[in-house]
Length: 156
Image 1 (cartoon, rainbow, N blue to C red):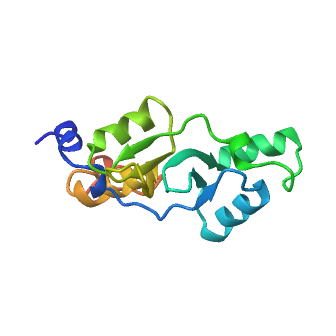
Image 2: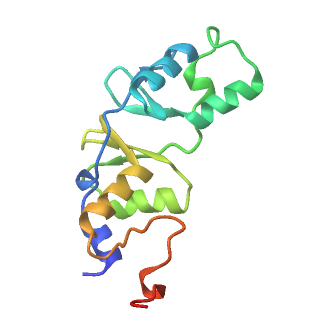
């Protein structure tokens, strides 16, 4: 089976996911950023009260906040939500995540159940981990700056 066929066949639920940091509209910037720092995750997902994702606040959003020089205690996450927001069902093919990353330059993708409720976050890191696990025999990992094995001389 080819690489692309594999991505079209496997569901997103096969990708490694992180537990999402969930915030509601009206959450102050300071609170969202504090949660991102404490959980070492580059985004928070803005959800409604039933758990359906409405948007995403990322580290790129934090940069936009800093550039505008606003007070973190007066502004809310939805004001600076990332326009590159993607929510995909866990039953959809992994190729949808690939497309969001490749074509739309998404870093994070919100993963939902069939009812549209948030179940986790995946994206660039999830794809990289998936490739490393599933295609370990195909993907060769090499230290940066080292000479490729085919260019190394054997013997004296």
